[in-house]
Image 1 (cartoon, rainbow, N blue to C red):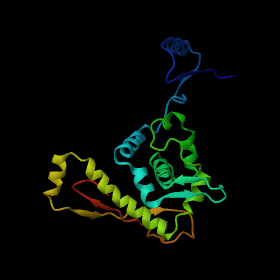
Image 2: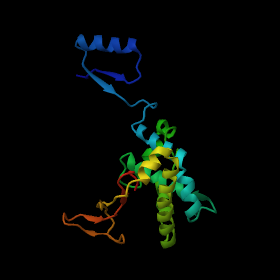
Image 3: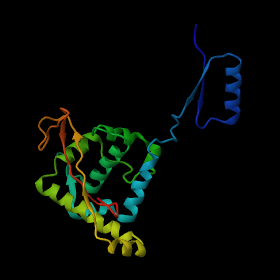
Image 4: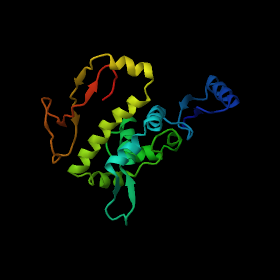
Length: 211
């Protein structure tokens, strides 16, 4: 016996919803609510990243220090280092664990209007570009990220700057372990839980909340 289902989308018309509920009461079958409309995004929170980029200029500051990257075999096509770094960061903030998760973000056309990097490079391209960060590139990226603190400071209101300037800063070193699966990744080892992990140590200016 074929099961009848009443499917109600997030943007279904009120008349359609009423009809489907009446069918449910009549014993037609079970009802299913879905939010799979193409106009819906689960990553609306990334709008805060886009606003930070607009106000502070995250991508432009990274590009100014690191420069642009050429994908091997791309016939001179260049990508901004800021787009690569921030595009991958947005994927992680949206719940991505692997580079291939960038492709899921690229497919989110509704969310593209809210993100800082509307169309990040594909996962295969990001993987190739990541290999272009040599030792100097990594150092330059660290310098650029450190320089973002200056950008954050510049956009703070005057009274907030004065409040922070009066207080002796507290710097919190907060190491955190990041599990990975590549056994050849430099600087990674087994932790006490048996996980293959690295341990970045962000330093946070406690009073200002800046890393």
